[in-house]
Amino acid sequence: MIQSTLRCLEVLDALAAVEEPVSVSELARRLGGQRGTVYQQLQTLVHAGWARQTPEAKYYLSLRALRVGKAALDQAGLAERLLPALRELAAATGEAAALAVLEGHEVLIIQRVESDALVRADIRVGSRMPLTSASGLVLLAYAEEDRLSRLRATGVATPDRAVLDGIRRRGYAAQRDTYRPGLSSVAVPVSLGPDEEYLALSMAAPTDRFDEDRSVALMLRVREDFYGG
Image (tube, rainbow, N blue to C red):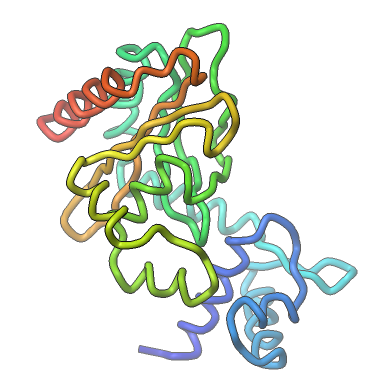
């Protein structure tokens, strides 16, 4: 492996984990690296077209990352393979259904199908949610141990092993009002293959009409239909 390339990719991941342009010093602090080294890595990413620099000497991802991310989804066949499952779930539950991945220390919504309900959860494609969301808990429970270790090393709080093991035994995670007051959700893991990372298939609803048992049963049925297809 080329260590210098790995270091640049770590900086790229760090840029993806922040919501606003970030300074060299802040990135160095997050990565635990030397400011001068991180500066060189950022300049490499800028030169390669992966990052941009503001007049205030802060850095953010360029739109190339968006283009490559879309290509990754297309190549994995997510739109073709999982949209039917999302539509089936939304129709069965009467609530919005979404697909999410673990992105840095947050959860990123990469696909979503709305419901016909007048009152519904306002979570859009591209939205980021905390690890305490149902999708976040599922993704942590099914993440590889080295990824969990890297998160903890950067100061990210994760549930203890007993909590994550419990989610794996149940096969799903649920939350009520944790991510946003009045909003509850449930999520199950979805795998596209033995060598692929897990995604979270989820549905969210206003808490006053959230039925966890029914939602879980419908989600597990939809997931079985997906794998059976």
